[in-house]
Length: 268
Image (cartoon, rainbow, N blue to C red; front, side, top):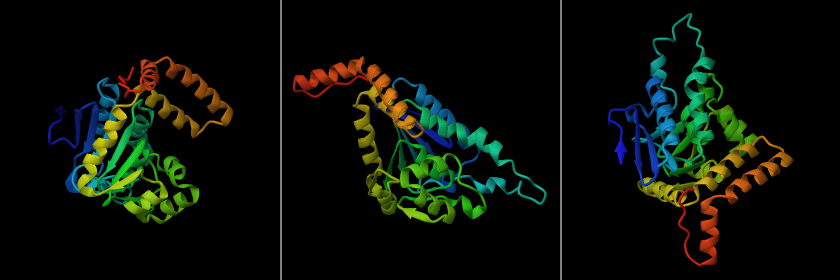
């Protein structure tokens, strides 16, 4: 296992082919500042490039996943006459993080241990799956400071919960607790807080043992389906199935089935 320095705002550890990226500013509920977003982007890039990593987990230290942008960092800027350039900030700091998660050829699991608010909520939504503590909550808090949901929330949220519910959550800024998030389809499962790490590892471990190329192609297909029409999606399925059929893991899966044994997938 390799671990970054404990003082880092983002910790990266790798064990059993699982890269765990931990937001590590617990004293401010893992709020985003410039250093955290920079290190998070670098950690995602490192995990994506590491051939030993098959699954990535995102979580937070302490009692929060992330409370979003650290507004305390803006105190000195927000004075009379100041005109913020928030679009520039999004394009430079936040959007690359969301794109790294969506475009990574590996499953990314959000292990939501507490509140996920604002950009922290967007970060969780961008992941491929979400497993939540029973103490977790989700808040599209932007409207409360006169802003609009960003960092991909307006793309992912309607696709997870439907347009009407997404409108309600974004326009009211109301908190959704873990049980409601599960009912809405916002998360895949809810577990007791004291077993979140164990259950996350169990889910990640299951994915590690599955065919890596198959998972990669599945992720790419499901992402593409959000924008493709039927004809284009059918053709893309045919193209990617051709690729999947030529992998060693496909041959191993069929052989194991015929020989009545468990398959031993290698990700090849």
